[in-house]
Image 1: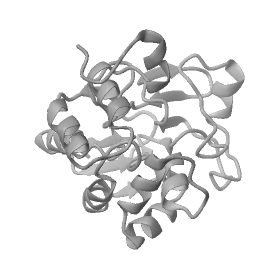
Image 2: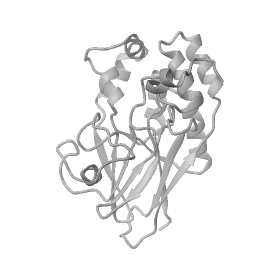
Image 3: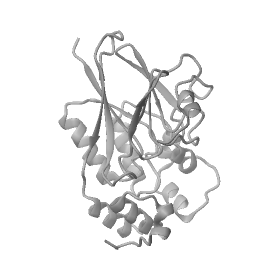
Length: 256
């Protein structure tokens, strides 16, 4: 049986310009299956449009921390959060909040588990410089993942910093971010390739892809819409540097 390719995207964050560029790249490769690891909304200006595109193009999506905050009914902590929530329709919010926390697929005899942040919940962060205990935890079945079996491959998002690490427990893959990449500004996603009906002797591969897009068009759109926190968004999109570090580095909107 021919091998099947599965594109895995994450952390679109309302950046429709980047999302369209990544989806076009996926289509140009002839890939029809797409998993989305959450944080479709928040931070960028077009969460509703990105939600619609996700529902149209992705075969499955898991819930991220921004879906919990923005699509839920909890207390909001900033003007930006209020703006991103009101930009969504009631149906958008219902769909986003009802997404599962994790899902499993099989490729070449391997259980691939898709999560946003970790098998604990959508908020428990596992960084590139994780501990050995955190690495082991990522593959374990938990109440959040529905129990069952341990995973062989875990794909996740959340930290906007793509990497791959293999160990005795399995292979941990962070796919990076489509809309808010923070190791450099260029969007990232991953491709998994394998035989959905094959055993562990079947070929299996993981590929990272970077896709450039029109950053300035996205920045201009955010400002035209009057989005709160547009200055921090502008710096992140141009530099790939997290907004919490902007002040210390002397970064200001519009600076080269």
